[in-house]
Image 1 (tube, rainbow, N blue to C red):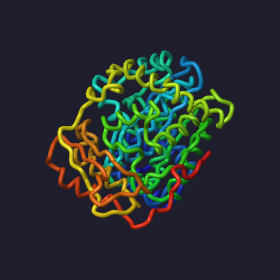
Image 2: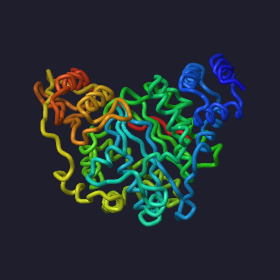
Image 3: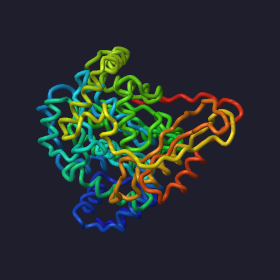
Amino acid sequence: MRTVDLIHRKRDGEELSVEEIAYLIDGYTGGGIPDYQMSAFLMAVFFAGMTDREVSALTDRMIQSGASVDLSAVPGVKVDKHSTGGVGDKTSLIAAPLAAAAGVAVPMISGRALGHTGGTLDKLESIPGFRTNLSVDEFRAQLIQHGLAFIGQSPEIAPADGKVYSLRDATATVESIPLIASSIMSKKMAVGLDALVLDVKVGSGAFMKKQVDARRLAQMMVGIGRRLDKRVQALITDMNQPLGYAIGNALEVMEVSQTLQNAGPADLTRLSLELAARMIHLGKVAATLEEAREVAQTKLLDGSGYRKLKEVIAAQGGNPQVVDRFELLPNATGAREIASPRAGYVSGIEAEYIGLASAMIGAGRDTKDDTIDPAVGVILEVKIGQKVDAGAVLCRLYYTNEEHVEEAAQLVEDAFRISSGPPEERALILEVVG
């Protein structure tokens, strides 16, 4: 078997066998296949796609490249939740505590920010002392004791995915649907899950810009889960404007605290409750989805989701007081207001521009080695559909270094569209797959 022949065949749209995909993944992980050949293969996949059989084979081989985490000692049904990445998307920090408070075991394997989208681990690490590098034994013990733990992808979990992901980022193949699906599902399925709820974002602030592509991705991931005998559901949700009002790590932790105290933005609260309800339903705590929605609502209103988050922050070395006293979180030193140039209605907020501006002042990273400034970001003062006066504040930019503030402020200004009439309402949850 020669690597160049497999690249050639995939380039021409042929289907590779399970053995051929195993040869490529094992060879690359083991160092026998160089970066330049794997890069060529990834680009061939980007243009030619993959069949369901190939995607399943790729996912399976990535899982087998490392150790599977045995969670059989953890009581109950194990349910995780994953988002494909958006701007202001902090639902994991709300839905997971609500589901755990309801009795679901939630092993959260989370990611970091890259480009204009935020990462759950970066948000958590803005909390002083919070540890995301738990050992597998610590992860398991915390799940048994608290029912919820947040951890990053360790070198033992699907190492082939970690290696391929870095190459995808450097070769402009991140948006490939088969590569996204196999990457997400290999990480999730290596951790002894019983079920998974997916939030597939679509729109200007997401990797998937078109609903048809988001649907294909959702269907592919649900299919992989089914073939591995796991229960998987996916929501396709709108990411044409940021979710909630806060964009930036510590700022988003503040909004999570407000939302778990039932004082958060309507869109963020609604989506978090729906994701939590589906986790509760798949976790067999509630017999029907309607009943699960009532349970999620109760856990929000009685404060048990809020208490669960504080409990987990303390368990992972963080200061739980941060969710009551925001001055204990990193705070920016400078602020810049962006005002509306005219009166009218907010008809659009380009989520990608807000995310890029936030990353530009330090809230995100261009490469995995970039350092994040946890204090900085953007707070929206308006959402799509709201009426504004000329000169009204649209948002505030919070920064600690003035280097890129002018550029970021211009980008944020360009993100807002003001029209003479109100825009058509757009649904937040567009489709359910699975």
